[in-house]
Amino acid sequence: MRVVIVGATGNIGSALVRALAGEPAVTSVLGLARRVPDWQVAKTTWAPVDLRDADTVGDELRAHFEGADAVVHLAWLIQPARDPVTTWQANVLGTTRLLDAVAAARVPALIQSSSVAAYAPGPKDRAVDESWPTHGWPQAAYSREKAYVERLLDAFEYRQPTVRVVRMRPGFVLSRHAAAAQRRLFVGPLLLGPMVRPELSPVLPDIRGLRFQVVHTSDVAEAFRLGITEPVRGAFNLAAEPVVDAALLGRLFDARPVRLPRPLVRAALAAAWRARLTPASPQLFDAFVRLPLMDRTRAAEVLGWQPRVSAEDTLRELVEALRSGTGALTPPLVPRLPGGRLNELATGVGRRA
Image (cartoon, rainbow, N blue to C red; front, side, top):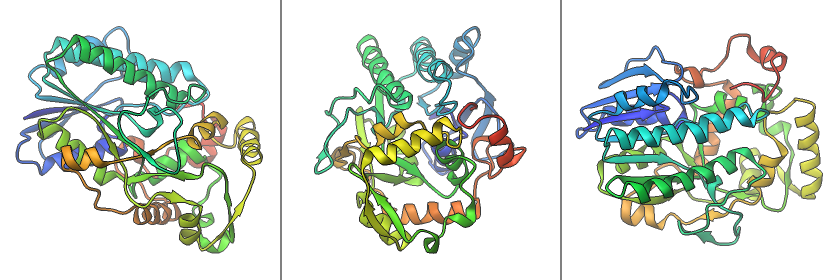
């Protein structure tokens, strides 16, 4: 099999490249990314592609997709959150161009990275399956764009019924290698490694809606590998047990959960956002506390997927990596960007990709 991965240098993409290097059914991998890494992996070659380039990217993608047995779409801009036009151009219009190229090149399989954020607000006391509405939370750009891409996929499947379309909907995808990148994307430059210590947080906020799911990056990469090699279709929820709540976080940080009003926490986050101290918007917080819990039965029964790393172990790995500033060798995952945290502040938190 010849596989093309769009967005091959990010959190999931880099793990999938490693997974496919050991997959006998895959003969070659083409990794596409805005910034090509200086990283050699068995079976893998690299090429630059920017989905925002409306003038040339369509022809480039079609040429790259010719003869491919599967295209995996992982490319996604979370930042700049303060410039939703840019993220829309990359995520929605870029996906439109990619789908057109998949159809033009007659690729038989498309494996798309969706998200729990594509789901409409849902329950926290029970898990929902893949039939739950994918309307997102429209005020948050990330959720809104994930939901819109679901509509693009609906239309694509209607127009291209012979293409096998797989939609992966993971919870929060975490790992040691992505820790530095996720700190930059969601927390900002003020979270220093020495601050991520249990003894510094004797209490932690417990707010209504603080129940969510995480999954280790390596387990998500395994789900994508199965989506490529197995003749499956449709959507798959990906999450590890147990569900993360204030009690689990309390054990992790050796801290006592303290109930706080959700409006108070949101107001504090909104103030930090306005002061350009955090890259995560208050609207993203609104979406987060409304995410449904996902049932992963279909992934187990149809895809044959089971997570190997528990949610608690995944979080422990992330915390340790945040403390030590761990990253990886690809441009999005490097432990330290040029200029460091001062440059993050100077260029405007949440204003750049």
